[in-house]
Length: 172
Image (cartoon, rainbow, N blue to C red):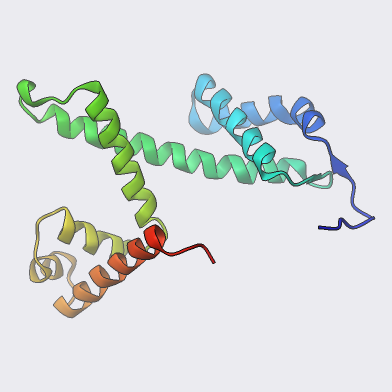
């Protein structure tokens, strides 16, 4: 890869020293927790490190904010999944509570499912979840969503195809 002569690039250690404090404060305002903000700031710089591409000096904060924004979205999604899972556990009798290891594995599984379904239109995702996890048949999902049974069938098929492609097809 040849780099244009007119662009100037910032070494990662300079970028870190110059913008780490700003990024951590920006993240703290976004997530409301200084410890989580510190972790997300580190993760942001780790993404830059493994990306192994130079950072243009024209808009380094925009790049940092874009990467950090994606990490914040992932954080909120994981947090929502964990809260929903813990609420569901609270409804169970005390004897059926899983061990911390099993809970951790279940949360990882739920997170992977959420990632698999990322990119689906909300109506497709909702129909799929009602059918697969809600125990409803196509007609029941159709009534609940106010659409035709055929639309639900197409939504479920589209979601299954999407999951298959994410899991089994090589990236383009």
